[in-house]
Length: 171
Picture 1 (cartoon, rainbow, N blue to C red):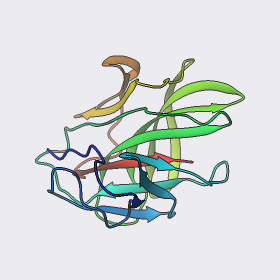
Picture 2: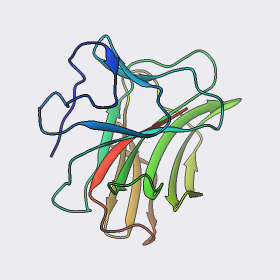
Picture 3: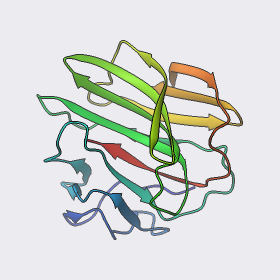
Picture 4: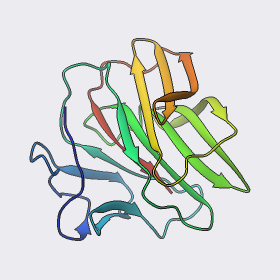
């Protein structure tokens, strides 16, 4: 297990050490993740231009989860989420769960396989401040949760397996 409360000096997320001291972060797509006031945040992106960062730590199994607590949302369009079953490369292959607002608010469970995104399911509600957003792959059962309750899924999918890292997704 790796845990990051982002309790450290302000700066770029890339290369920073997790608060538990076990790992560092790598921004492998984009460079807009920062730590400000003990919060990881993304800013200045263009709609549809994702920024992603992974924790450089191999978990014990690919049956793991990644979660964040939403601490703030912009007043305009946003996307924020987590990813699981990511590997150590820049290849965009993982399962993700994101909450977003583009005209309407929704939460999406999705997969990326070699950069090609497929939506696995959606829910008509986006997370709000203080909600916990979580993606949880367990075998071929993939679930997106808000505050511990399944918002999307479980969905059966076997496209991504064996990858042991987690991370952040946003734009």
